[in-house]
Image (cartoon, rainbow, N blue to C red; front, side, top):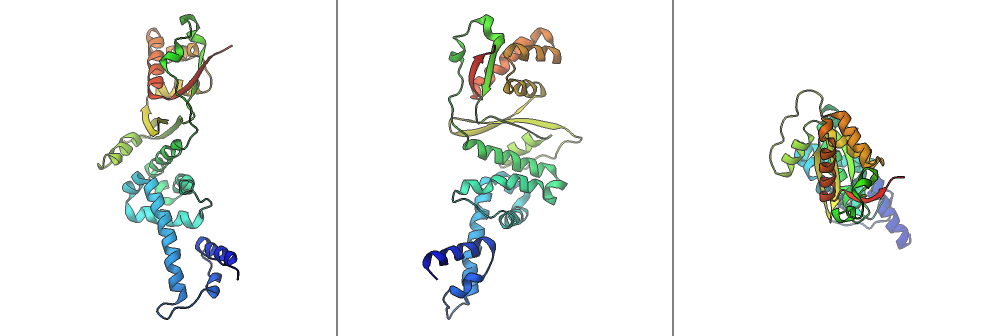
Amino acid sequence: MRLAQLQSAFQAALLDGSSGVLEHLGTNAREPKDVMFGVYRNAYVFRLADILADDFERLHTYIGDEAFFSLARAYIAAHPSQSANARDFGRGFPKFVSEQDIAIAAPMVSAVALLEGVLNDVFDCADAPALTLEDLSVYAPEDFERLVFKPHPSAWRLDGPGGLDATFTALGNGQPPPAPPDGQTTDRMIVWRKDVLPHYRALSYEEAMIWSEAAKGAPFGTLCELLATYASPETAAVRAAGYLHGWIGNGQLHGVELSA
């Protein structure tokens, strides 16, 4: 067998668990060759599991060593690595976790995995300059109602079960997570990258509503009308301006243009 063929067979055996390569390996008086090869196979699995543990540190803390590495081994078996880039390996892990019994019984497990996965993913999103207050200075006040804002490419919206924000914050601070709240509630989150660091924060229902509409291309005047319909019409414009100021300050917006 040529070297390239042997290397290919060796790699395949690591990935799919086959043992055909053993007949081409030399013997050793101290250990059988299947035991020696097992060292490589186990080291490969352990390294991939360590990558998942690094990428999903809060999930690991939340469910503990035994449950996490059981999930990791099952994921490795079901989804062999297809890329030389370690960052690509865990992209499907949150979805895999959501389909397992541990997450079906406790939805917070899936939610922590999803939020942590999104934070990982926004790190790799396309770069783009963030909108600044100076960028708005070229528009006359009477044009503001026609302004349409473009989200930054890294800005993602997601919803999770009530208590996700408190749980994720506690895990990040090394504190015991609180018990999930009684009843069915929702935590609305936005995740984005500012400079080179991923961030997230919880949104009120009102802010989540107008962010979603703004992301679809609704002009500023329409956002004000939505807020007026939702609550306190007399302060709708001020609230809309406050949300916009926060989005700009956080670097969650990329561009602005006038609607037709």
